Image 1 (tube, rainbow, N blue to C red):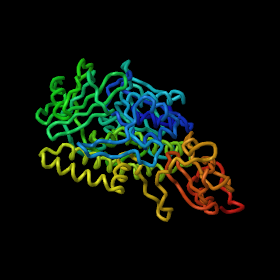
Image 2: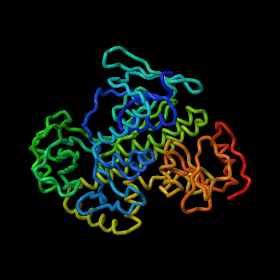
Image 3: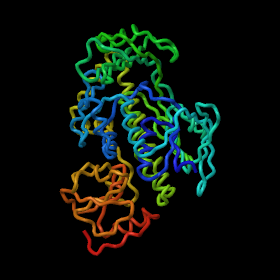
Image 4: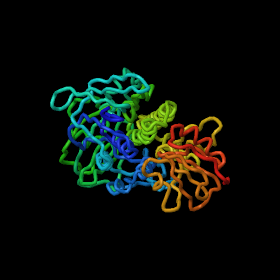
Length: 486
């Protein structure tokens, strides 16, 4: 084998996954078609749950320093979602360009010894079954000759036009939902007072976000002028559309880059085929509304990484690998629906329809449970996975970053390990994959937290050994029964 795992794609999803695997002692090679880094980025939003995952990995603080948090998200007109009440250390939306997220994640991957091969375009993929089988990935390099990389597992994190997905022969059903979105990087003579400026008026949409270095990214859509993605972009049209949507063009000038793209809503029917997995935009793509795409992909990676490491190390079986699709496919579907709904509401054309949308939206956001559910959905804080039959109803929920002896839970989770949270030092012999943490405020029960910060199990010390011996079936040592119970 050239590596335990080959990841195709060095975007945020692939880089986060590569770092997780390397930190768990798994050898990783990342194949990236691009030959150099680029600031051609569409993602600017890092949501609270993604920041929590980055905090578990010790890099949230560095990324936070590159951007600006906003605590209220303006969807359209006066309909706003309050993020400041989220039950999180990151009760906001961080505005920072995607290349900053990639930079932070690549630095982590580099420090962990991840091998990244640039200029490697995937041209084929074959796998030879389960058991001791593997996967061969064929690439065409920048130098021309064909090379083959062999691994136990392969992940396609190579975007909407995924070569891995095509090699698997998987369909990507869905449709285009908004065409001819114009992009521009510009200077502004009169920058917006808020970090973000965004609005839609039926036949025009505009979004303005800062790079943080004096440049701004403009997204603009003109219902009156729908053309092919390859059609040239005129800065004057972007100015005019921005004025219609936002009342001003902020004095935009000196564009350094102009382009067009279209946005699709699509989802692959299976995230796993044998030893090959799909993650991020290769598995699902959404409308740009709500800034969900990059965040959903990075959370895919957080879910998959520890499961692949378990398989490589011999204790994670097929059912654990299958749980990646079982847990993440419904999340991708939910995000597809929620972001699509936001887009359709934003682009309502009749004036009376927009007024009705605004009135109903403001009424709903004034109802605390509805407002909390909306904030939890868009931030990812509200995501939960289904609990197995007979399990405690809390299993699959996100575990808060509670204070524990020596720090906080996220500190204890660093290194990609499980953490058993107990009212005092556990009286059981822990599996090799598990560390212990004592909460500052005792709970009177045991809670086992997965490496991605979700609850794996809850119960008593008397119940833990039998459950752990089943779950960590390939662990290096059995779990002994406690001498006393909690």
